[in-house]
Image (cartoon, rainbow, N blue to C red):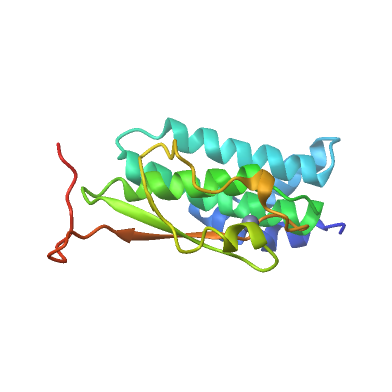
Length: 172
Ligand SMILES: [Zn+2]
């Protein structure tokens, strides 16, 4: 699907607002370059990621919350306009979401929610995964996800409770 500049602006409206991007300046910038609109869009996404990485005085949780917002936009852009699976970006979405949660001192677990047409994830649906901050034991093996358009399985995060139904705090 070919996108126009107006569509591109509309599509990323919220992100541009968040980063105080003046869309008229952006248009001039794009017209000066000789690359494709898709390349331009990717260069902007990467710019946002770098900018967030350079933010000072921001907690790790908040930083990852912001990164997560950008990755979600990247994923939908990739799937909508480039018709690619983008599972590697989906993984970044999950990782940043997990790290954003790690801001709290609660212990979290995750359940996999199987999306449409994913028989693999259905076999994992009842399992509960302990979440570590870096998702080293990442629960979804995207190579096994057989969904043509890219995985649309989700992770449902829940604070862990003990046998008395009390929230469990991280040991410092
Ligand atoms: Zn899947």
